[in-house]
Image (tube, rainbow, N blue to C red; front, side, top):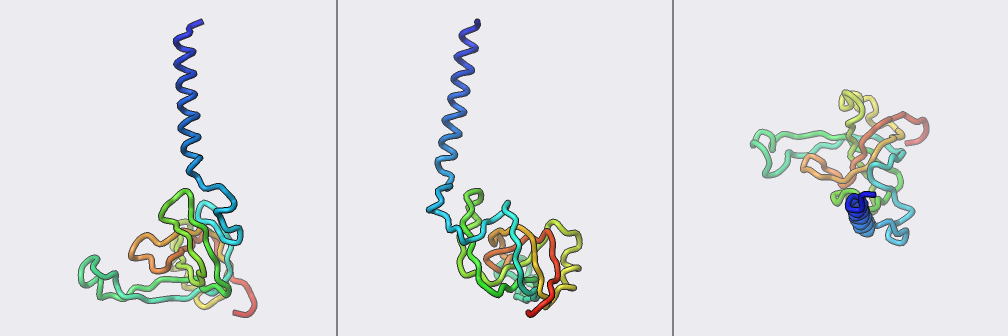
Length: 158
């Protein structure tokens, strides 16, 4: 038996175990730290119901050419009847904890030509299936965004 190879393998295995233990010890999986009533950011998939609305904002201040800053930009939101909260993500420090969220910016990396299609849902009551993530850029206007995987109109009161 080649003892040198055996001890090198053992040392590498032990190193991997120690590094893994250190990484997971900083991962906040303690149930006391997380609000069970709150939703989770991506990769968790959520379903939320509300009304699709269009909002308009002035161009991003101090960014881009003056013609861009002066232009009005539109974006789509899901207005919720009841507020939600979202736990901070242990996977992405940008996805911070949010409470009393009533408006989500609607985006989609999953549906081709989404921004043309979303116009058909304006002022309609819908259920959206998607992933939540936090605002990162100046083009994202609401604190929490929902990346739409599926959207369906539902009947009933607004």
